[in-house]
Length: 196
Image (cartoon, rainbow, N blue to C red; front, side, top):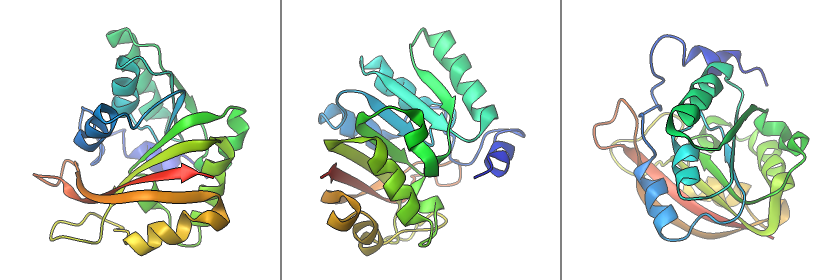
């Protein structure tokens, strides 16, 4: 997957999803113990979520296809004195990282893939997640008046992340995904999924 379309989103000002702070839902998940061990932030963008998790003492790798976003993330890490690795990687080929993670974060990436792309993406996530590890997904929901682009149903999440694909959905909760275009965030799902 070429990173150029995504990279263009960061060149002329902030991307719509780049809110210059970690997502409130992520902060809540972290406060509830939702992140342990080595963490992968898949589709990390400019790194705010990864940097927040690193500030809590977690070992974090952020990956993205957008080189401009990764350069911004590395600069933030340097300025804040945080040790976070940011590297270019294709979400469909995460096994090329040669590493496994106890927790994987997908904040705003799942909903960008269509139904035909999701099996390949979910398999890629499984290839880098430890057995009994956890995937935290924050994606646009189809429920509510303020839905974002490409909203996902609970059924679509469960269809993609099931025992056949190496996962078990522990829970799906309603939340908000903050963007630059939604004053109070867009309707979102927060799904905690176990690797089986």
